[in-house]
Length: 547
Image (cartoon, rainbow, N blue to C red):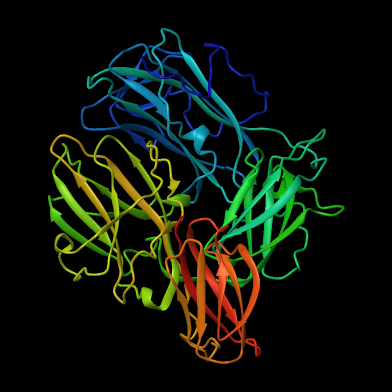
């Protein structure tokens, strides 16, 4: 038995009434017009579609037949969306068979680029359930501020390895809601926390008579943020390299992040709730908006790749099979390109394919961390992530690779952050990260990878940083209870111990020549010792604590 749609309004045959002047933005949403029996008029994609007389209303509906060669789509790109406005998205479907299942798989659009917001509602992880009655899907959402379109797409899948079943659709609609007044209150508990070179923000939703549709979070490298102007929507801008940025976040989410920031840099944030969108957008911009700040950790980006401009310096190596890593132009994080690999081509095939980073000099850094995002679906071997310092640049099967653990996508192409992975276990001037995909003749998952980043704390003395002249040694390293520090200079040095995320775990300790520090109360992990001399020059050493 298939799972029930999380967002289905279970009252079959009950439509949500809309005002008499409400305009349905879906063209031929009632499916009464057909170019031919396989193509409803004004629909952009119609795979395995047939004109049917089993209807929810009117004369015709669309039948969608499941197939053995993968998912089949019915799709229309809807224009006329106003960013920040409220819309009710609705359609009816009939699934009364055991050899087909369906679900919505839709996106907001900016031009032809898909946008990620409302993934849980628009791209649910569960499928339709068998039911003799028509079922109604309806959800009310706020369009992202940068949206100007909506991709209304429904999909049919085979069930229990049986194909040829038919599900039916009728009465698609996207209808705008009315204009709302300014939000009553600001949100509460607005905070910012740095994690490496990412800053995570969270808050408690605003309350009051008029709730917001969404929030505008403004960011800056200076404490100079000014309130937005009513009637002027602000587009998302996650690139803070120019000193400012913005994000629009729907009411109810209560969190967001700005990533790939400069290291050791303070960032300032303010949050403004709003209703409506476009020229009707109405911010709460009186009084004092909640503000917060955080400073990123002192880390540098060693390598980063999001595949928006192709493969960059990353290498694809095909070991077995005809299929290879490819660029998916629209399904990456935020609707941007990503790397994609599948062993399915009409049938599952045996493959081994690698996606490998350029060589990285880890000898210049301490506390190196790897992060990325993955999305996957279908059944097959897990993608492996590995690290090596003896790969010769040609044949990965001859190199020594160490497996890395990461948080995997649960499936249904849900983008999932890997977590911060400690890769400081390997040193060397030629370190490589490898993503290894395998499939067999009997099963193949599809894996996607995006937003890869490797960071580290540059060892002071490299580049133009002012380093202390003393040669400082730490022993034992790794250590568990106590460490000894030795300097070849007879002048005072002070030292602080930090976690790799920048949290101070031991206050300043001073010594001359040599000293010792009790670390019995410090948890196991990777730490950085920051040394400072009397002139303000510094140095960093890595410490591994084992418990």
